[in-house]
Image 1 (tube, helix red, strand yellow):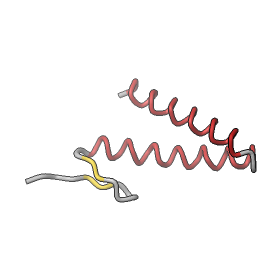
Image 2 (cartoon, one colour; image 1 turned 135 degrees about the horizontal axis):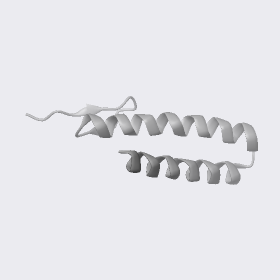
Image 3 (cartoon, one colour; image 1 turned 90 degrees about the horizontal axis):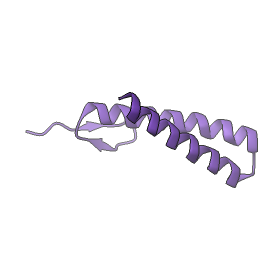
Image 4 (cartoon, helix red, strand yellow; image 1 turned 30 degrees about the vertical axis):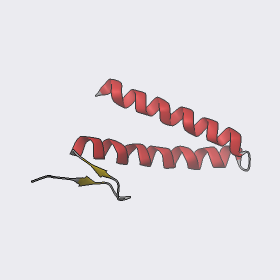
Length: 66
């Protein structure tokens, strides 16, 4: 028997911790995306750079914390 955990967007994970971390990162990315679009508007390059940097930082922080 195999247990699968499915995120809200349908992505599957082998354990609950990975699924939860993925969903948290998805929520964080959405918040950062909304902020960057509000701050930079049509300047997609700047917004994308900010989003990618913040998401990478959050991923590293999550790995460090645990």
